[in-house]
Image (cartoon, rainbow, N blue to C red; front, side):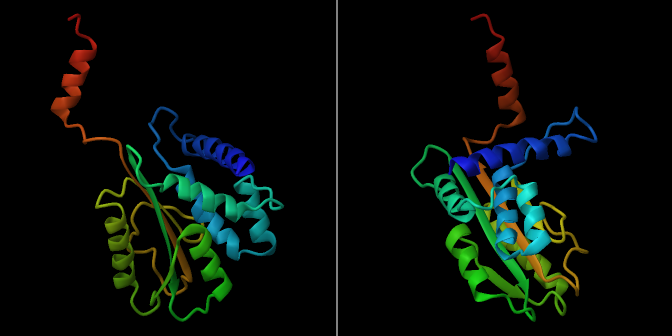
Amino acid sequence: MDALSEANGTFALHLLKVLCQDDPSHNVFYSPVSISSALAMVFLGAKGNTAAEIAQVLFLNTEKDIHGGFQSLLAEVNKPGTKYLLRVASRLFGEKTYEFLSTFKESCLRFYHAELEQLSFAKAAEPSREHINTWVSKKTEGQNRIGTCFYLGCKAHMLGESIISVGRRLVVKSSLSHTLGPPLSRFSVALHHHRLHSTR
């Protein structure tokens, strides 16, 4: 898993640079693990130039057991019994009329705990979009703190109306939910600020 940790670290830093290009003064909060694991699922089914490009973007050494490394990493992230709650939930949503290889579906489930659910993007685009967004909301307890969705190279928190279309074949959704303590209200933030600067 050391090679994967190094690759994820390099990917995270490069992605941060890209996210900060337009306005370096803005705060950026993202989940490199959600994004890299979603892309790694796509990598599972990719061949040729596409596979090479994904491996390059993720800084992966294709000689190593990448998917086994992600399996271990996600098991660690989703480990129960910790003092915090941190969960990565992933699912693939595929066009109902498209035949996905059973080996691809089995590998996504085995390594990423991500099932493939087939929906009718072509005939029921809006209900499909709503279904995916409902799944995200349930998995993140309505908070959708960080969501990553890949469809032809785009990413979004929730799916907009134009995302699901007739030509769409696969949507990969990975969401991160975390709870580190009770949410802070404006009052409690101000109170904490006061205490930090108090001379008492």
